[in-house]
Length: 361
Image (cartoon, helix red, strand yellow):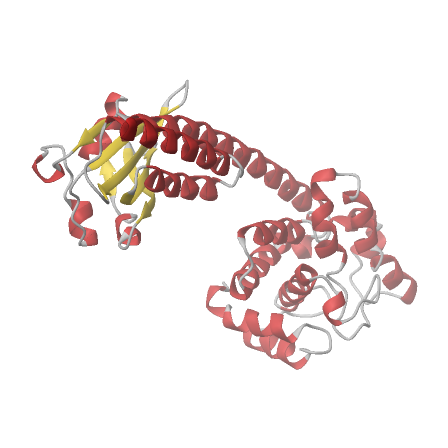
């Protein structure tokens, strides 16, 4: 009896610790990853997976699969109701299966694909007040068999995980709405100049290609995306006679145009959620040798995101027709970037863009 009580106490302590960990982030991917890591640790399982419902296609998919062959399992999609997980999602009830291979509900495709042998399993639904999001399953107890205490503690974790997933999904929806609003604002400003149609989206895509090649993490890529979308927001303060001029700008007009990064940073400084993107937006016309504007920053003093956007922005400008010149070919534009690496551009960023060239369309 003592052993059972000790085990339950240990599991409850671990549950509290892991629940806090799962709820400490609003990143959807991170919440799901932490959830399955917590589940396998909680019941001492060899492997586990988090299965979510694709309501549009009436299917289940493996969002996260831990274990040696987890990546292969993630390619599988199940019809709703198929497999033990499908049964759990459909019924909304947890289940322990001690001899999985002889259970008629068992879907063998996952074992076949991963060359893994599932012996025993606990599968519990991920339920909120409103709906069932999917299922959490742990596979192959490392010592002994899964029991009801394991199932109950996993069920308690699943309830917390479902809430965390719902909160993370809501946060992601808010971020998507925010990004969409920023994109719409940038495109509205872009429409003032018929020659820059699609410029914002292309600069964003080029910047993200560079960022991925450099190895930026998810949070940094998110910041880069917004910085690129809003890089020309300050042009709202540049008068049409300068912004839309067909010919070469006079000295005073160049000066007026060069103020747009400052205008942009002033605009964004009033929006708390956008303060982090100001350095990348403000510095995208700085030059690596210190001769750029608005602050004359040099080398690594220029924020990395600004150095990335500078390359993406210039590449798009070179490969787009303008009133005073025809677009360069992609090859010629890349040659120009290489020629000015170390002077106008960060050579490491140019190198990353060259390596990312297969992504450029």
